[in-house]
Length: 396
Ligand SMILES: [Mg+2]
Image (tube, rainbow, N blue to C red; front, side, top):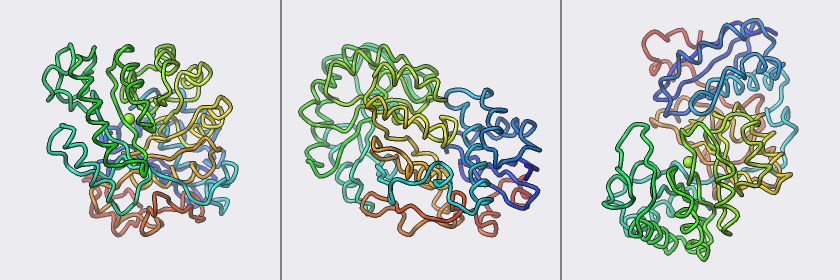
């Protein structure tokens, strides 16, 4: 079998990759919704993979893996990897999880990072009210993640939160030492959310990046009695193109509150120090950024050897990304907690993808399906109307 073409279109906000072959089998991959600008970058890789055998996934990856980097520049390589596995599975007549070593669980736990309700403000009561809505969601999530402090730029609206100038929008870092008032505000918001969730639903917190080490330690120690699931990306994360394992280690060694990072990191080599130095307790690679599902699987196994847990990132990965997350998470060792459940936006994404269970999530779990490849397809008839101008031949 040989690869004949690499195509890319943007459906809604998500770039979608389609690899075609000379045997009529094609494979799909998807890039995060926050990266709709990546199409030209994805098409750059076509010259390296046409003519290769897609079922030799690793040999194809060796041709392109070095042409990637931290978020957002690992996405194209990752989406291509997923499309290759999709083809390899279909060619073998097997679900992808079988090709990764087989499943160790029949259903995979997911956590809520994407089923959201608008917030009126960022007072503790606003956080509590928002958490009540998420707790009542029909998916009955057993873990909910919420953004606090520097995460998502909310902090620009809290006066005197930190000793720095708040930046709004774009990719500016908001980073600096917190005021006493700022730290108290964060703790009060977390307490308000825990009052709602009790011990029925786990609370994870996406915190930054932007914290200084002494403040990060203060927060982590203050929250110890609340047993939160993890504190994510306090020091680095999101679009930060480095890891700082030694600095993370200083925070992690000072507290019993689990410390988490890793969504922006590309390739196993860049997880090596984080894992070997026990710099965090939990890592959250995203299969759409790390370099693909086999890369994520390898890192998960290596993390497990070192007593480090897995909570893969995925909120923007869309419904094809969801399928990839289900396939790989079914194969992960016992250090697996849950992956971040991606939602399809706009809603018509649910009309153009075939193969997902209905409902998708039940009691915070997704049942692992057995169809060949990733087990999901785009319905060309339904999807054609959403193709941007110039991409009319995407499904041909
Ligand atoms: Mg995050």
